[in-house]
Amino acid sequence: MKKILFLMVEVSAGFNMPLYQYQNVSFTQQDSDRIRRLEEGQKAINERIDEGFKSANQRIDDLEQLVYIVLTGMFVLVGFNFWERRTTLASVVQKGKELEEREDKIEKILKKLATKNSRIAEVLKHIGLLRAKYLKAINNSTLVFVLNP
Image 1 (cartoon, rainbow, N blue to C red):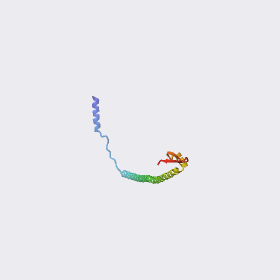
Image 2: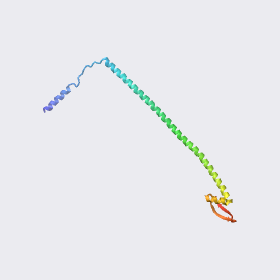
Image 3: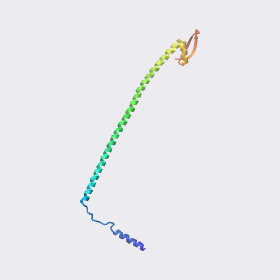
Image 4: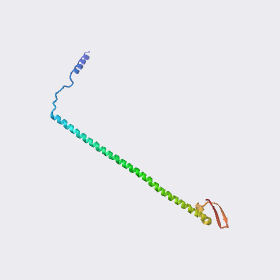
């Protein structure tokens, strides 16, 4: 019990004592100059940091514009490729049609000749251009082929 009483007295005495003592501090002109110089130095540092941020922002803006230019160039290149392939493909298709028409004409001419010349008819039959439904022997030397249209 004495210990608790002693502890209570000591705690209450501790609250009455000041935790720090007030001292009269003299503030001189040198201290004021130092503070002023520190503030000026901080302002200069802040200005340099702001300039750095401004230049970094400008570089980012320049890079953004460069990205837009590159993307535009890529889209133009893709569009040009589509256009160029379409025009090239159109000429190839036209040339293919012309060759097919020419082939059909040559095949018709050969089939007409085959009706008159048996040797040509045999060659065309052998390569598969001529399909004979039936053959008729006329006068033992002339073969007549009936052609499929």
